[in-house]
Length: 365
Image (cartoon, rainbow, N blue to C red; front, side, top):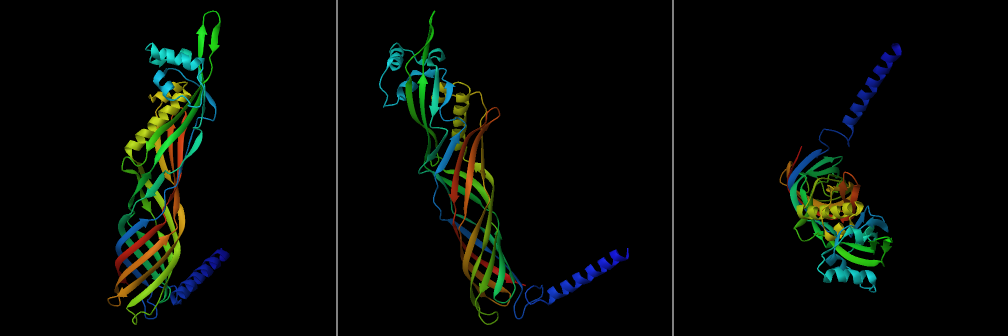
């Protein structure tokens, strides 16, 4: 018991001495410094101009390279319009032409056989991507001054909604080797020569529907700053700063038209998985329930600032600054189904690299 009392008494004494030492510190104190105020806060307009470029979107699906799937019913037009131009005619293509000439619109599943599917397991989409648009919000800057020249600034404000502008069109480079067959009496199934199909399937046009997506951006920053001049002597005081920015994005919403396009693409994958690859090419809905989800990763970036303050009196001042942050995040869009899980994934880096212009009025205390 005596040891406990001694420990508590010693701890209390040390804490008291530490608090007293901090109170007397010329750098860490709630009291005014030698001729300067410890704290300042300013509010004003914060304009953010991203300078990064759109980065290509990398897409993948749950259909493995060379995966075999039953074709099922498929329209004759879809077969004829998507024949590989490098393929030589054979008995199967002649048979498709014959069905077309006699007015048959559909190659039935009993004849279409199966197909090996290529090209949509994963692929890049050049000249596509997302870019953040300009935005203006309310900025709040808070400073603690260690000395008259050195301060720590916390950059904050009202988190703005940022529009993401889409660039380019996303195509799925589908190719397939179809193996039709015919069931003859007595003989049974007879395999016909393969038919090579190739089609650039338009998934979505990212630029066709206005903004592709939007997100709320939380980007607090911490910066160590050096202020030139001296309080009470120089009304105009330039400063420079260097620190780190943390970026967090939530409330992500994708454009409804693009979301519908991605759901349609999800139906295509479900049809392939269900043994109805022909329905996938025909763009028919599946028995699945594809849903779209979008998320963005957090990011940390260096930030540098050059600015100035102008004193109206010992408390009120005007402030202006320009900052740059080397900020990049990545987005992931997925299409999922209850039965088949993740059907489609699309990933892209977003180079934000913003220039931040700030102008406000502040108060020292």
